[in-house]
Image 1 (cartoon, rainbow, N blue to C red):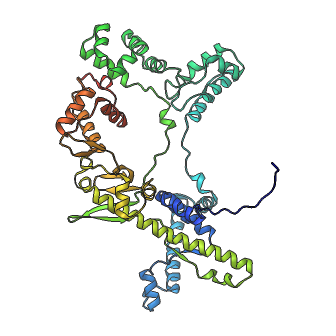
Image 2 (cartoon, rainbow, N blue to C red):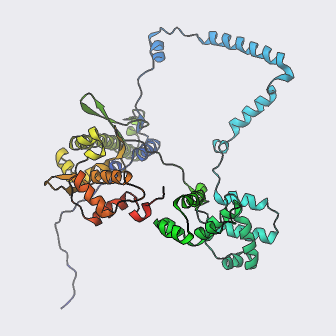
Image 3 (cartoon, rainbow, N blue to C red):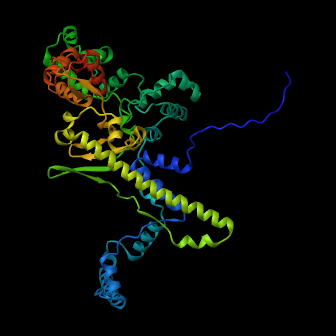
Length: 478
């Protein structure tokens, strides 16, 4: 069969997402803070975008009406001259007894103006910097300082050494014995117990620092029986060390006073503050929805750039493209606000018991129900509820929180999984710490109180989602 070139026409359909559509979808799933940043960036890049002028202030209205009764410019100058003369007389009277000389005040104010804003704030100390500062103040030999720097450079965020002494010795070009000697010195730095290799070593260093190493029972508990404390096997400890309950409580108080992660206070990140996208407030017998538009500028098309529409062909094309992009952004922001309002309104309608009673009134809800209620696609509802938060009478919740699966009740009804988790949390909070409830017992109580029949593995799954440890680790000695 001979090979030949041939042309063939084929008709097909495909969905092509334009850049404008991609931008609209991206705006839907942005958080409020990211949206504010994106809008400000567009204001910088698009000359056809500008902030809408706010309403004139009362002072501007008085000036426009010609009824401004404030002091005029000459009056202000006279007042300023009078105050300056009085201040000058006062400074001359104080002389050398003034709190700070005038030339020093002038120099200080000038230096503060020239100083960058970043240099006026203290940097948050790090664990490595805090330890290096103490290391360089210690009376160590240069070889030991080098070994100490290698030790500090191999610490985790919790303050534990992540390398062996042989590896540190190879990095520093010294002997393992020198590294061991420097390591013992660093472990007594602030915070005490840092650079330990195991939790047991960390706590033993702190015990020695407190002068409690003379108690063999305490040392033995920390060195060999931390797992028993973690698992709540207190009867085994009392039997082994021949202790009564009061003595064990004293030893537990001492161990709890120790810090198993001495470097955690330095490794913590700054807190992340959530700004709600929507407020739901109860007014009378109904709920009112308010969108949070704070810091979000109101955009409009700039009229000053219309002159570019009459320039060269290249200028007209550029201006036409930017003007179209500005118009599309404004429409996309308005559509985003309308969609967010509709979705929140539908959530309030479906979850009204939650807004009146709290988490226990949360009902099963899926994206499809809200999408059908507002006449939109499920993907749109999913995007608009991503990284969005609502301030409710019962606290701040992510919009995704209101969508939860259904749990079958014994009477044939359904209850939301988040309601079951709320009941589970309360059951665990009310239990006897000496005899914590097992997963089977928690399931039985859920059946009695809430009327749901769930298996033990489901209780374990919900308990894990709530970061509640098993019964063996919840047992406490009172």
